[in-house]
Image (cartoon, rainbow, N blue to C red):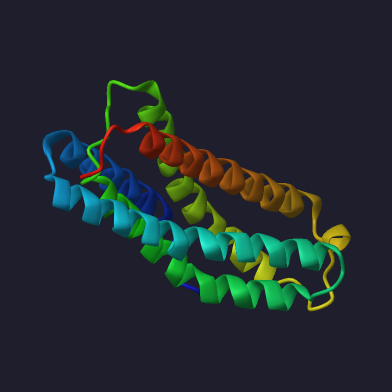
Length: 182
């Protein structure tokens, strides 16, 4: 009989919310020097590549599967392989973000922070969904997936894309409008 691990989901959501909150509190308190800020920017950019790259790859694999050019098993295999990169990148984004000297008086800073929080919670919500998809037969197509599962999958994918690209775009705009980095 499988162990009941349903308690882990709320604990994981609480943990990512606390991590997000702590890094925002640290960012409010820390006043990085020019060198620290430059290093934080470099780490933040590296973290975007480490995490967003696999996200784009996963969504591409999903589209290729929808087109009938790959089996669902290939998508779930890539997903399992990409998860450590995605979560490593997200952790680096949180930590480096604490040293980016965000301007909390700007509404766009808060929009970006909310997008990051959405990403974290969406990533956790995807885990059980991925297990359900992985349990589907090898020849499963988009049309043969149960409607509720298909809707959850599409909603989570759209949420991910919107939140990632919004956070990325806001981050680029903020960096372009900063007077100086060093």
